[in-house]
Amino acid sequence: MLFFIMEALIIGSIGATIGFLAGMGGGFVLTRLGPGEGPPLDPVYLPTDMAMVWVISVVLSVVAGLLPAWRASRVTPIEALRSQ
Image (cartoon, rainbow, N blue to C red):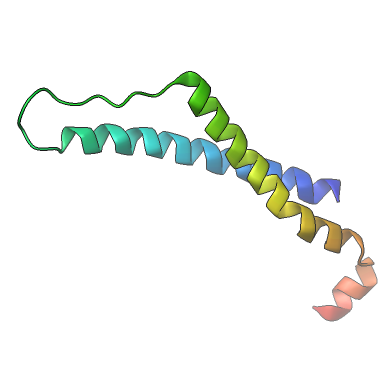
């Protein structure tokens, strides 16, 4: 079970980091694509909010991996191979 939870943690961390960077880049690009009137808008990224969003993303991925991990831990290897 620990193996599956660690896998969900690693995948969640990578996904949260990529999404985090893509969101920041997308916010920057979208503010530059606005109408040419007035000064360009700059997105505001607060460090506490960014950390909270990253942690929530990772926690949600681990929570989503708990049920499959629990189910997989209840199946013997022989039964798992027979069902494949």
